[in-house]
Image (tube, rainbow, N blue to C red; front, side, top):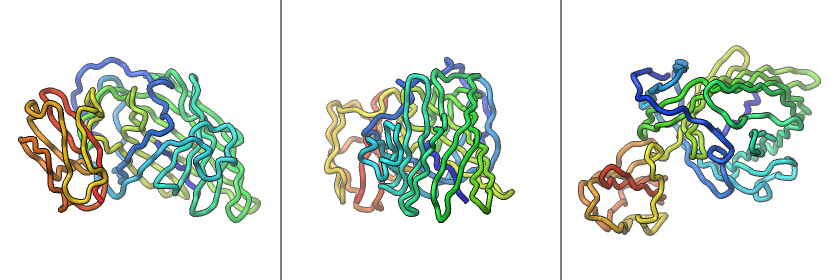
Length: 323
């Protein structure tokens, strides 16, 4: 089974009115040097509601693993010479899988993937259009793509990808509520053929994107092969996505990574009303109503965490690593 790698059950309740979000290259495309941590798990297959001013509740999603995605110049990615035309590479899990894309003012094209463990490069000689700009409620696009790759034998991949923006509003994740998000549906219908075998695949993917944030907020995938379907989820672990201030230089933390005690320095500590530390699943591992310059974290397991300061109506967030 050859699944397209994509780096990138809701309950409907009443939602607040919001302006219709629009994705453009400037507010959607990732840039070289950006790094995101995604939480991966499963979902129950319930189709999310479409339409304006929705509230989608996925606060019950559970975590099975995490994935770190770093965007790099193609020259700094494995097998980059196999993907002419790509202008940015996505490095998933420290070199496990590389994706290659090109973003312009009108579209995002997928040039393919390199799977390190298999030594396989899937180059799309007819690139797959994954996004068009501007993209807003009601926008649709369908594209035909082709690829040739070698995995034991020579395979020929061909198919269509269709995208449609079907809703907007807010989405509730285990890490918090994210407002001003656009929901779109991405459908892939494709086949891999060799001289002796043809495999048919379908992917039905629901994606939430937030203008100004360069990672998928939430993705729900139904992948079908041989009459069997799997249901997977992935969401961004950053708990401050719903806030206007994602990262603030007014908060400094050190050392980072930290082994036992982390030091905090904030310019207006008297204004802080709460200090929280959460893991990538959104679970609180530390909470205090008082600001302290030193916090002992030796009880935490290794991993990625977020420290969040509540300052009036605002929140200041920093990411750190426990080793």
